[in-house]
Image 1 (cartoon, rainbow, N blue to C red):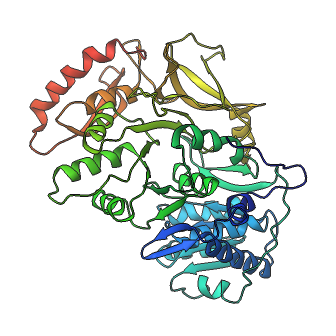
Image 2: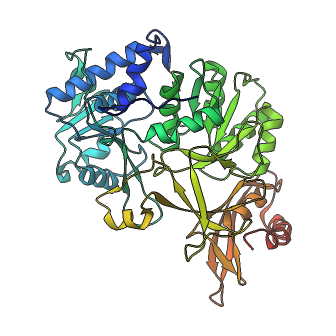
Image 3: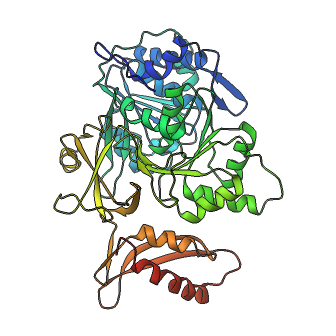
Length: 491
């Protein structure tokens, strides 16, 4: 059982996630598996210290933002921990964004330092003349003009560093979340936040120990992908870092090679891996897996059942958010309902409300509000958005659920995603789940569409499996879905 540390005088999350393990005797234990390298906790600490000292030598101070745009690699963690340990604020961002997005991220955050790699650097160079605050452009790999090699940046820095005595209420890290409308929001998290949202998940769902090896298909710049950091370094486990895109064959190869015990993935990837294994003669060893986790999108029942039959491990589906910091509703070992998001984890409090803010009865759909001390205190430079979402201790997730009589929560989509067709509220997520059960359907998406009478009707975009033809199958699929959606709680 996790015991909250004393944070009265000072608390630095980087110290808690890294130095604590050295103090507890894990210095020679593997922390990172990367390609052919095994990096220990002591080696990770020394590299992070070098980054921290190099940043200090360049005049980086507490609360200065350090932007990280890297694939999953050791340098990501060196920079993340190095910045946090001096009281600066690491800000991971997507490697899949456009130059205009990068201009926004850098100018909005006022980051003075950017750490990226030589494949992504050209995207930043396209907008270099419009960056108002950037002072240090650091590149992993081969730097171009006006850029500094990461290796050269840290080469002469000391491996010893005195960790900044930050307050538990100082900013520790940011993540950018686009939400559904407007420009991306800088989601601020404080040094103490993680201690409120991660222990319950690690203990009740992952049951993770220092002997585990974690592999996440989602990358570390994603909120969900941060399990490669937070669950691992909370528990003293090890992580497999893979910079490549998680194509099904690559995921299978990584599991077969590194023998992870915990897999974080998403439904689309689980489906892709299953289809790959079904068509592949080579046998891949998945026997190391003891926990398989899903989040990021609703997990259809058909994928849960196929994975359990093929791999022999149940997928524990859950839901969290960038704002909350982690997963707060999840299926747990021994208590699973496939298709649901699971039960509320200890340490969190939620309520489901209607449009007027009144709590809805059991079985009815409502917007989920959540209370936990790890939730973001505010969005950076987004005062109105902060007021819309944060009401005292309560946070409006904007996600819609209903709760059944067993306490399981069922995701019904975002509040602004629901469709009203024929006077009935329809959840696109539920329709998609039903469509995916049809043997002809590989992928699908459901949106609202105005018909010739200007009335909104659900419109499904379906990718059929090989061997099926479009027109005849479309009719049969439509007939299979309609009678089932009429009686769902969304209706």
